[in-house]
Length: 398
Ligand SMILES: [Zn+2]
Image (cartoon, rainbow, N blue to C red; front, top):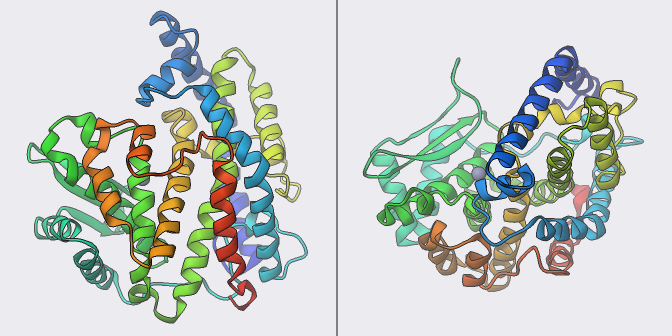
């Protein structure tokens, strides 16, 4: 799917979606059962629908669906045109007449930036990063490495993906990745380290919900991805600018799909008796609202609105998906501070980590002097800053 060869990419995507197509009835049935059982749970507990219960299960103590709607409106107004513009630039770089769905993951015509050296080199580089970032990150990293509470290399039969958790009564942070030699190894490692470091900073509180704050978990991981930027040259050498451009662009491009999934999930639980066909039509409608530039190249399966099968969050963890984007929005504000000051805003980050789940997402933002994504006009302000940075880059040279 990431091949430089366009027809290879197209074939790879088609075979991926063929799997979903062949199992269409099963996916529809599973989703329908999940929606209905969740709806029943909500009624039994006295909630009007699963939306309210789902918010509580996300530990959202002072946010309502109206807040999320306000954020999605901002995405529609300013996020969508910005992504449209970035896609247009991507199409120019790839020198294709029109960007198709199978082109979206390829950012440059030349091979994507890759980290130097093997996985051990990445771990050694991060030793330097965390030692220089702060005494707290340094002792965190020393502990995780000395206890070998880390598993980053891919191997046959290893479970895919990446996550961070903690082990045992001593609440030892643990990190799991699947390095594959791409730039994503570096980004994902920082991401999981952001989670693990926050657990490390709250472990003395000894309350699970404080250590793993469900409503703000991604705030720490996304911010860490940005805090390590000043050291990216260690990993990418002369390709560092390309990496940063890719990292920033990818984050922004996530905005529309996050809102599509979120609005779709609200639809599912507002209308639990909708048919499979109505759900597909709703998905396609939302896609065209938030991603008007999307070109499915006559792939009938995707045109019929079945692209949502691949988003496992819709099935397993309703309402979580948009939190990645809200966290991204906040991490951009930290990034902006870093651009202005020339050094990472590590102190306010550490104090947020120490608060962990003892504060709500909103209160964490207040404590770090960050704007809330639920305030009107908060998104345009930060997007303007990011756009200015991107415009300064000669993207064609990438
Ligand atoms: Zn995460």
